[in-house]
Length: 179
Image 1 (tube, rainbow, N blue to C red):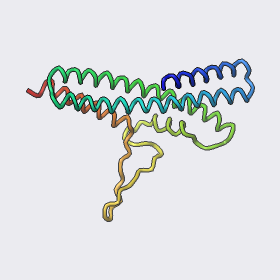
Image 2 (image 1 turned 135 degrees about the horizontal axis):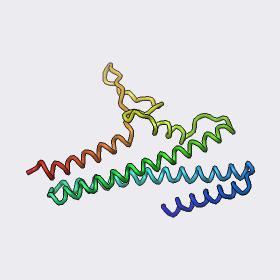
Image 3 (image 1 turned 60 degrees about the horizontal axis):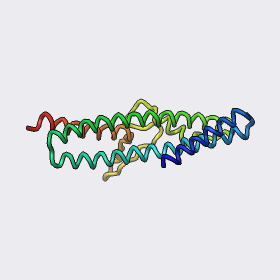
Image 4 (image 1 turned 180 degrees about the vertical axis):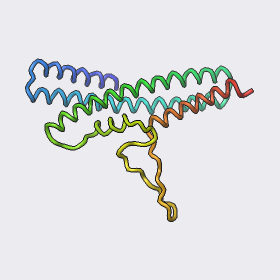
């Protein structure tokens, strides 16, 4: 999968370089399409990576905490910190990808006059300050008898942070508080 992504990025860069050499509208549009395709591919790959790593991390944490020892708890704490830092880096990369994708969509919007597109909506939701809800997302409701209760919409980043914090707290508890 990494090979396909790097090939798509190289194609987009090559198209952009060709665009700079011959700045006619068709080659610019072709370069933007190629760059947008590479960005969309990376977005999917990065999200798949995030949740695959999270799943493997939870499985390893469960295995380590099922037969606890101080060595395993220290290792789990170190791995939790390292993977959480990798998650933060992935979020930073996703933020840059979404920002560039929305720039391309704004360029297309100015040409075609269409409404908000995919990466623009994601970038708006990504950059909201409220981590517990998503801007512009209708909250689902649960009907219980006569009550129509709103369900909170949580961002993936908030849930992932809570998982890393929970596992790190379990490791700290195992290291220092469980005697």
